[in-house]
Image (cartoon, rainbow, N blue to C red; front, side, top):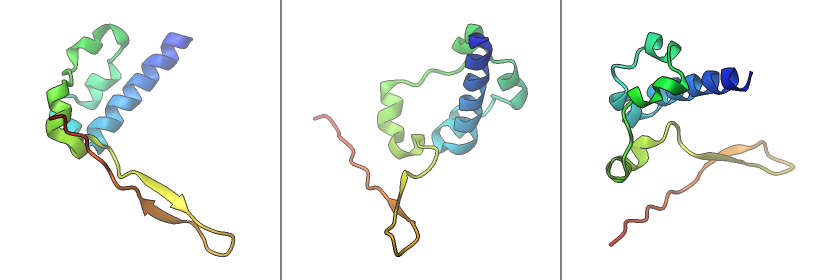
Length: 91
């Protein structure tokens, strides 16, 4: 039962990343819905790896959506607040 849950979540995460992240949309271009449906922990190594250099190059293209936080008060409805990103680049 746990393995079934993990496999379902794995498929959801891969599909979400492919559909919503500019980086993974390009990286997973050949990963069709059929490939995702057949995905399980045993064949996970068939997906492309993400390296540290990939992370450095892609930066915010890795994100699947903007990081938003809701802010409001007792008199106003919540409004989205875009959080600023800080990027640490090692010297």
